[in-house]
Image (cartoon, rainbow, N blue to C red; front, side, top):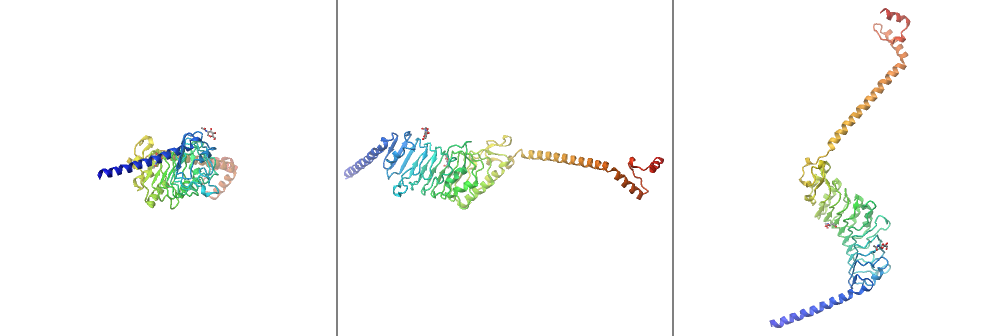
Length: 410
Ligand SMILES: *[C@@H]1O[C@H](CO)[C@@H](O)[C@H](O)[C@H]1NC(C)=O
Ligand SMILES: *[C@@H]1O[C@H](CO)[C@@H](O)[C@H](O)[C@H]1NC(C)=O
């Protein structure tokens, strides 16, 4: 019996193996389908994959469309020179909703020298859940009018825009230029947004607020940018689902009071925050860091405090030390000295001005007295006449002759 069941077992095993081989064979066969146009592409009913296909360009991508079946779930194109993404880049659903690629879930377009993305590029792939656009040259600065880049993607969960943008003229991009991508979005299921390695500067409160539209955001990755005073959104009901906020590898020297307050608020209100990464920022450990230091000591937000190091400080005293190992008294500046110097120099200036004013006053009084010396003489005379017992010194020149004699007799 044992032998028979063993035979039965191995028989079904063989059949399964044959069945799997058949499936594999048909898959491998169908993978060859798009080779006639593009040597470095493999296509099956569910997958299209091209790596380093230099023949694939913006104007002939239409030749690849023939090989994308309605059942396609996954498209990966890397290392081509696509330059521009036209409207309805996948599918051709303009005016024909039945030509949508309803099963397409995963698109990887990394490393394709993409410079322009039309606002309607993704209109025919309504069920897309992962979109990778990393390592491209998107010129966000130059075509500001093309709003709505990521519209009609209501089921997108992961958006990878790592190093996706061309450097600005000074090697940096104002995040505000990008912010409009997320206004009027319908990406209400987006969980992961990777914006790392983009040379972004200037994360203002307003542009941070545009991220509030992404109501299901769980991971926001801003690492490896150039933010020095990043803001947090201030809108109500924002970042309600946020778990991880990565601001590591930026240019932060001090945290602003507003930032610290908003992180605390998000932490208290949503109760889901697990990580706020701030490591590898050039913290400047002088008196300017006192507020940040205090906050790190007290906050209940899950900041990776242990990994924050001082990269500069007054007279290099704290360089390389962990911020939380410092005492408040360690956070000193030259500021106090500078302040008193400023004060004393201000005092000197005030004294100088006062002296000059006094001098001018005295000189003009003397001049006034000199010009009106006649009147002064008369006044003095009258005054003396009214007060006979008193001697008054009257300028010689105005003495009357009779009195001259009197003066001389005295
Ligand atoms: C990519 O395409 C653009 C225009 O289509 C062209 O100007 C450029 O030279 C191409 N780059 C490479 C590396 O082939
Ligand atoms: C953020 O992106 C950087 C660089 O792309 C990566 O090393 C890091 O692990 C990411 N952080 C999170 C929390 O995923």
